[in-house]
Amino acid sequence: MPRLIELVKIYPESFRANIYNIKPFRMIGLIDVSIKYPYGTERVTLAYYRSSGTNNGKIKGLWYPIVGIKTKDGKFTEFTDYLNFVLANTTRDHGAKSGWLAKSLFFARLSSDDPKIRGFTNGRHYEFLLNIGKLLRELYKKDNYIYMKSLRINELNKIVTSKKIYQYNKHTQRENYERYIDDIYIEYRKGA
Image (cartoon, rainbow, N blue to C red):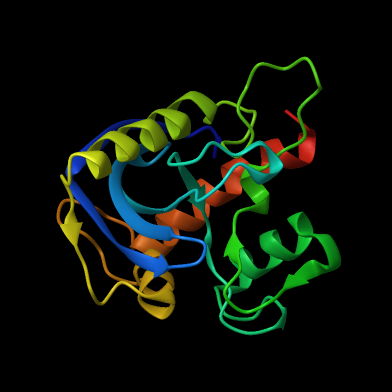
């Protein structure tokens, strides 16, 4: 089965967000997209966070993709087996502290003369993931999102790894999410 997948549509009306922490001020959010897989097009929920500063070249206020949020200090054990494997293999020391936004997969290596913004991969999905981040920034500025008070660490992780099958889909959110992460991980390993 071909591994090639493509993000094809964003559902702006599905954007929901909540405050993650105050100092530094960060928001976390979820957005639904359609992803074209070899087995058909499915609706999938992705996780993002709003950057609070400019460390590591991040742009303040821009929204960046994450795999999830770490709930315990140490090795990755809180996600699915496959997501834990990917995060361990894309993160220094193969683990992190509780509360860490699991974003290392998206911070693929870029050459110093590459004009791309770090944090959105540097492969085929770069433009689409960056466009989502820019759209979320605009929606957030206009207060055009659903305030989801229950959206905390465990809830965000639970939603992106849910075994629920969304209406019109044939696969679970978890299956679709893992295939999306797998596609990015393959490019990450190749240094795309």
